[in-house]
Image 1: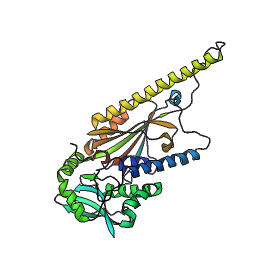
Image 2: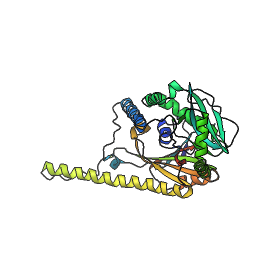
Image 3: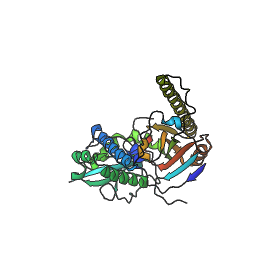
Image 4: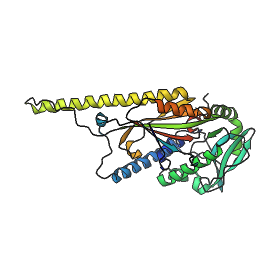
Length: 88
Length: 248
């Protein structure tokens, strides 16, 4: 197993997984409806299509049988520190 | 006019995070009994219902809000038990925040007990999806239609076996980690296109782990048999996925 420390910025998708679906949910004085949160998913879909365009030639949409061709190549652990604290 | 954005509720602590917050503001505290809300004063025209609804259509704005919200909560949670609030929780004024803290004090107490001295760690597992030649071409039978159907069936069978293997790897890792974690939660795997990897995500899980048990958690992750999988560990996160009121 390899421990890698990429300089990746904290992934927006990881953040939204937690900030929009997790956290204490209270009915504040100002509320955004579920429909509004759904708009985030619309935005994410827009992001997906722009990412897909960047990967020119490569169609990232996996056909149903794509995993059939899976070639397993070793166990790699990548570590992302989300606190922004300097690493030892 | 201004509104009050809630970041987190924590047990005590006299020092507010430095921020900056979602509106560039310096966060401050609203105390009520033992509970302290970490809040920010934000402009009404940017954070009322209509403005927030508009913001949700703009991924750039969502990202800035999410990063600022997260940043303040990470600071707030550094020393004390802290319950993060969901993104976009906004009150009219400090009195409304204080009233909410009084009304929900018991529930916040339970959440803060659950997350005390614990942090959240995310684990994503990917498997490669590299093309590999089919094992062998079916014998031509003279009927092109039959050969085609055989090939289709072989593809489908290989697909089913590979999905089964991927599921087994995901389950094995999740079960192993859940045993050393205080709580576990499986999220929906993210779209393959967002990761930028040519791999399929088969596990997107998150765990509430005792700070004292983090070493054991990492050891368990390293020790799990997951040949061929790529595992990404993220954290420590404030306990977003384990801060739910009304659950014990």
